[in-house]
Figure 1 (cartoon, rainbow, N blue to C red):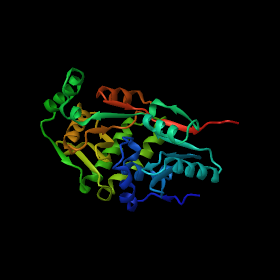
Figure 2 (cartoon, rainbow, N blue to C red; figure 1 turned 90 degrees about the vertical axis):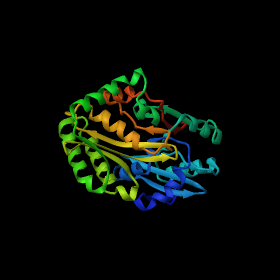
Figure 3 (spheres, rainbow, N blue to C red; figure 1 turned 180 degrees about the vertical axis):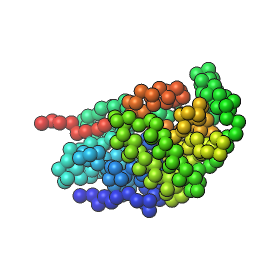
Figure 4 (cartoon, rainbow, N blue to C red; figure 1 turned 45 degrees about the vertical axis):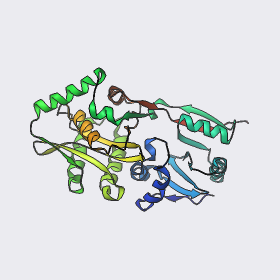
Length: 300
């Protein structure tokens, strides 16, 4: 068996030495996500033969991520296939982008079958577009911001700092109370745990975030973490729905504060939630990043 270990904050440098220099733009590869959701998925990693290997547990299902590294991919794949066999679990890789499918076929031809679930596709935007909001298609976003500005003259944007964390957590609780449905309750409570783990460890994680105040009260907040050297992941965005334009305002202000080295901004998945899908599409994504599930072909 591969000597996998649980991911902790202390593993940030090791894991990012692989993830930051690769070209993949998947939201799962931001270290903030890997760490803050590990409570739910039991995420583990190992470094073998110049490859970063990661696995997690989706309920009782064992799931691997695509190996990251510059070595022999066939050897890395064989290692995780054997690892799954040693645990008497079916082999599965999630989050495999289209180009990665070609890599898998080159390494192990006619070994895998592929499927795509639209709800796990990532929305990738050009940072420049989220900053400028130029063009007819983004006019509604400019209108939301103008309505916010016309209605809320006493507003302020601040960088997220540890002293603001408790107020952000209180806003999330208020947001939850007014937005939760029975269908989404478990998912939103898990999100709360991940959010709390992330922002209470924001310095160690090197999180970047922003907070929007109206009349001295926190009205919206957001934070994120790099995926690679040109792609930034927005992990969370929460706003008071009673303040018209608050979501558009925090989105735009935070995009302006993300360093210019990040050409792309990943705003993650819509999880088949109609309102979330509509909102993400309305920002005119540059790419909707399909992610495949990969399993071994059953030749029995």
